[in-house]
Image (cartoon, rainbow, N blue to C red; front, side, top):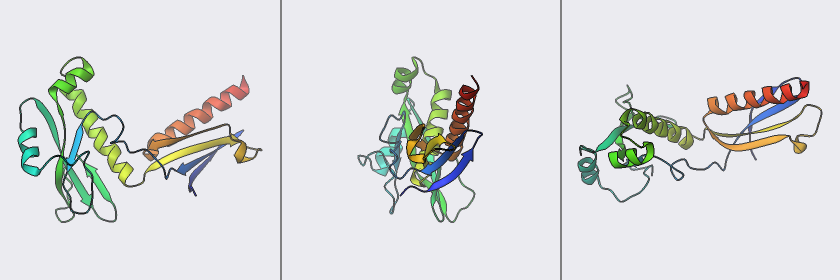
Length: 179
C-alpha cells in the first residue's frame, strides 16, 4: 500500500503526494555516464565488467571525463561526487565516467561543463532513488471520491521535484476553473 507523504489542497482540488514503491531505476534508463562502484554490501554499479585496476586505468585516460563517487553510510546511504566530511562513515567507492566521444555524440561538440553537471545530477538522482525518495501523485476534485481522480503520475525521484510539479498542476487546474 502506498503511503501518503503530503496532502496539498486548493479551492477545488486535493493532491496527494504518495511514496512510489515501484519506481524505475534511473541507472537502467538513459544515462550519459557509467557508474562503477565497489562496496561489499551494496551493488551500485551499472555493470560488473570492471575490476578496480581496469577502472582506474580507464578513468585516467585523457579522453575520458570521470568524477569520483563517494558514499556516506549512516542509517541510509548518500552518494555524491564530492567527498563527505565524516572520515569514519564515508569514502570513495568508485567513479562515474563518460568518454569524450560519447559527449560529442550527445551534444554535437565536446561540452565538458554540461557533461560534468549531468554526471553530478545522475549521482544525486541515484542517491535519492536508493534511499526510496520516489514519489507519485493523485489529484482529485475536492468533493469527489479520490478513486475518480482527475490526474495521476508516478516515477518522480526527489521530493522537491514532485512538490514543484504538483503545485504547478494545481495552479493550472484552478486557472482552468476560472476560464
